[in-house]
Image 1: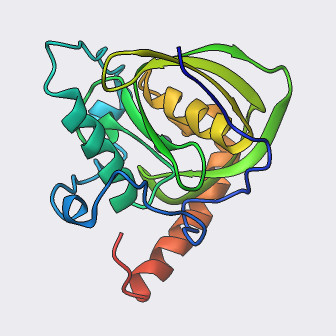
Image 2 (image 1 turned 180 degrees about the horizontal axis):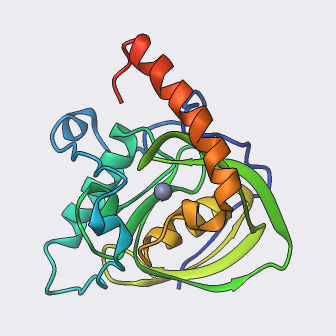
Length: 206
Ligand SMILES: [Zn+2]
């Protein structure tokens, strides 16, 4: 079984900052222009329902699914993207494990997480311009299937652990909203409104 060890010196990159990221090398420019799926609005019921397991041999071509997930993560400028966010209610997500390398996880599971937690501001593609301080484990161990159906074990730390952990919320039909108090959410929503208004004024597309 392959094991990917992620170094601990990941720099923090928020979804609004893409300067240090590169498109994963397996995605060509041609492919990128082909299949951009719309992000579902935050209130869409698909986002609030536990997605179905990916069944190899029954669901469509997993290699194609892998490309679609990587392409859309890049096209939407995210650090991670779950299939249900673009309308496919299955347990699949893509994420950056380093600034250059993207992976796609089918049927992911967290097997161990550190007691040490880290609080960090994060965003989510389903909630544009909403940033919340979320506590997540500094380290996780996880397992998932790659597009060939092989089981992969990973040890992830810091930002990579955070992204995996964030996407796992989507894998049970929850989001980072469920991890903060009402008061904190209200305050972040106010800031979000201001940022969205500014975005509209600047004429930036979402
Ligand atoms: Zn998210």
